[in-house]
Length: 107
Image (tube, rainbow, N blue to C red; front, side, top):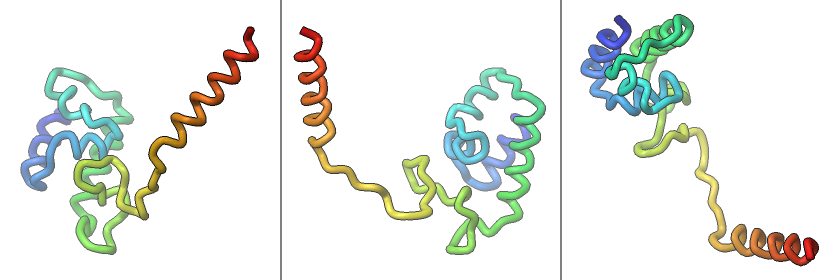
């Protein structure tokens, strides 16, 4: 069963279930759902097993690590570049102006 292999992988690599789900299946609830009885498709199981094999054989630390293995703590975004910055307030003001114009044109 896939869940047994994943549980052993999690113990061996000291990895939280949600991080594994994000990295391996792009679903943070993947392992939790498997624990509750979810049965993955054959293709999903094959991709997950391949990901575990690649992860176990790769250098997962340092600058030579593949980008998909380097998730930042508390984030789904891979650490492949700078985090975009947003100016607070400008989007909301523009949205309110556009809504106001739409409402004015409706009457």
